[in-house]
Image (cartoon, helix red, strand yellow):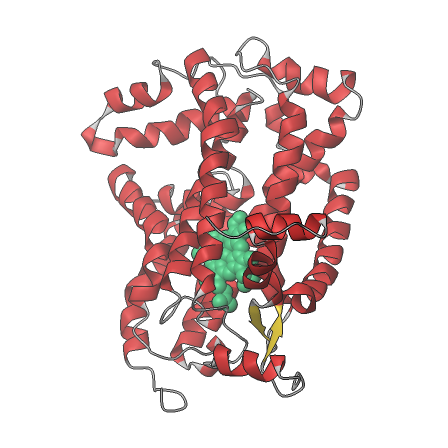
Length: 407
Ligand code: HEM
C-alpha cells in the first residue's frame, strides 16, 4: 500500500487518496491548446453545455410526462405547459436546446471540415464525433415521438417505414421495431426508454470518448500548423509565455471559451423567451390521429437535408441515396487523399468542394420543407444528385491537390 501521512488539510487528504493535483494538471492546467485558434473552437464547449441543459430540463419534464398514448399529449400540452409552475420554461428550454444543438453541431462539423481537423492522427476525433452525431439524431427522433402529436405519429410512421427497405418489403422488421402494425403504446414506451435512458447513457460515454480522442493529437489550429506541444509547453512553463505557441486550458483558454459561451447563452435564452415556436411544429399541437394523415409530412429542420435526399427519387434509389448520405460523412478522413492540413481557402479545388457542399446542404434543407408538387417535382433530384456527386468526386479532387509547405 502507498504511504499515507497525517493530512494537513482536506485538499491534502483528498490528494493523498485521489491524486487530485495530478488529475487537474493532466486534464486542465497542463492541457495545452494552440494560441492560434478563433471563436469556432469554442463550439465543442458550447455543445457540452447545451447537452447539460438538455439533461437538466429533461429531468424536470420527466417528473410530469406520461408515456402512455392516452395521456402523453395532455401531460405535455396541458399539465406541463399550464398546470406545473414554470413547466412551460423547462419545455421551452428543452425544445430550443434540442434544435439549437444541431445548429452548433453543424457549425462544429463544418469548422472541422474547413480546417482539415479530421486528418493525420485526428481521424478518431472525427469518427467519435460522427458517432455522436448519429446518436444525437436518434435521441432527437425518439424525443420527437413523445408529445404524441400528429407530427410525432406520422413522422414516426414514415421513418420506421424506411426499415421495410423498399422492394425487400421487410414489413416484419418494421413491426418488430414498432412493437405492432402501427405506432401504439409499445412503440411509445420503447422510444421513451431510448430517449430517457439508453441513448443519453451512450451519448455521455461517447462524449468522454470524444474528449479522450483529442488528448494525443491535440486540437488543430487556424493554419493547420504542426505544433510540437512538448517543446512549446516547456517554453511556456519556463516563463516565455509570449513566444510559446500554446496556452493552458485552465484558465487561459477557458476564459476565452466562457466569453463565447456568454454570447451563445444570450442568444439561447432570447429564443427560449421570445421565439420558442421555431422549435415546435404547429401540426404537433394536434393530438396523434392514425386515421387522419397530415397533407404534408416533414421532419425537424436539422433532418430536412437527408429527407430531401430520400424524397425526390423513386423508392429504391431514394433509399440507397439516403443510406449513402447517412454513412458517407464518417469516411471523410479516408476520402480526402491530400496530406495538406490547412484551411480550405488555401487548398485550391477543395475550397470549391467545401463551399459547394455547404451550399448544397442549405438548398436541400430549404427544399425539404416544400410540398412535393410544382417546381419542386422538376428540380427536386438536382441538389440531391449534386450532393452524391460531390462525395464521389472528393478522392479525385484531393488526390491532385498540390502539397502546401513541403508536406
Ligand atoms: C455533443 C457533441 C459534441 C461535443 C460535446 C464535442 C466536443 C468537442 C470539444 C470540446 C472539442 C475541442 C474544442 C473544439 O474544437 O471545439 C471538439 C473537437 C472536435 N470535434 Fe467535437 N464535439 C461534439 C460533436 C462532434 C461532431 C458531431 C463532430 C463531427 C464529426 C465532431 C468533431 C470534432 C473534431 C474533428 C474536433 C477537433 C477539432 C480540431 O482539432 O480543431 N465533434 N469537440
